[in-house]
Image (tube, rainbow, N blue to C red):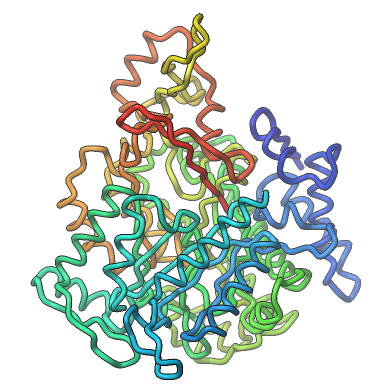
Length: 603
């Protein structure tokens, strides 16, 4: 067993975020997690399972989510990353939502809220004779909670605020973040659901037809589908928001479609959740399975997947839940989120180009899916099915489309332990601790300019830049495989997300990177093409939020600079952009030259 040892920036981040005391080592922390999460095991299995968990964690083949690292072994250990809480159209409903947000965020969780149940602005309230202020008002109240928490010295609140595309307040919602002065504590997304299916929306956009704005069964007006879509696209192109959440697809694919609807995602979008659902996250560290011959060790991956599924299922048993409703729901659905990290690092180690590896990624994700479902079935035989299970599970869109006949037959015979098993999360901080690329994202760039302010002799500061070259340039024979996010076409980004989503029962968090000069019209057409196959989608266009501290260099230009440049920066600068403490200030340099502080949060 080769124990992993975080070094350099990875060690710094680990020491700042996860030890239970300043002297705790990686190995000691791995033992702490293994012991804590193995504690529900019965029939004398605890020592054996603890040792199994320890081996997978200490070798860094399996990387638990950040909350698990931080919370395990502490009093009232809350180990889950994110939650979705409901709201309703009443003062009491709003009060309950704000209460839930305060409690959940106080225990370290991000929160997703679908505000579509709130009646639109201008509606008459029969009970009081007043006029409703609308769904966006609730969003502003929740956002203000974040301002208060940060102002009091707390951690920045991670939020996802959603609204259905047919809600009458949709036009107001779309305007709120354009000036970047409102809803600043939240990611915002437009939800498409069965009231206006994805396919119907696409047809109406392409034909320029209208659709109804409705709430409570009442039509309040009509809007042109093409105009609304173009506004969504223009906003996403110019500022990265809103994202689009495909609730229509998510609910058709949901393994518990018969139990509760999925109403929103968590803040990063990797899991669609029912009300009071939660994210229980961990990831396979893919480069750890590449052997000395540049091939994957499929047998070891199979062993690690089984241990990881058991580990995440145990987390649901040991967790201290922030709300009783969350505890009750989790015991009924036992939803887990096993993902991957280091996809691009793995491909580079295997001599593969990210943009040309969709077929191989398809094979890999199919294997992970098959083995994860086998592991959950085995747990059901040993420990019992999830509470809400019945055979309608096998009629879900995902089960019918994505599961093999062998897996379906085993589920029919023995049931399954978890309502959903797989996800792909961003893995920002944990990926940095593992020193691999994050989630399924490509490297930002194998070479880039880092902008910074250099002190001058007169005491002022002067904007300067330096070249940063990834050490992988010296480790690979063919540097042409070192693609960065902007060397890869938007179509290839989409293809990777689509092929991963094909095998994922939860959802996939992925940023589609766009070059600065990418035409907004092309984005509209491309997005419509891939929209039916993705449960969520979001973009970032280079330079869309001012002149960023890091500027990617195209691969061909980087090759020239690599030979010309004698003094290069440290690759750790690139990783620092992911924020070592998960919530940090960075400096954005807008086009007018002013300095603007922004905070990035990674859950």
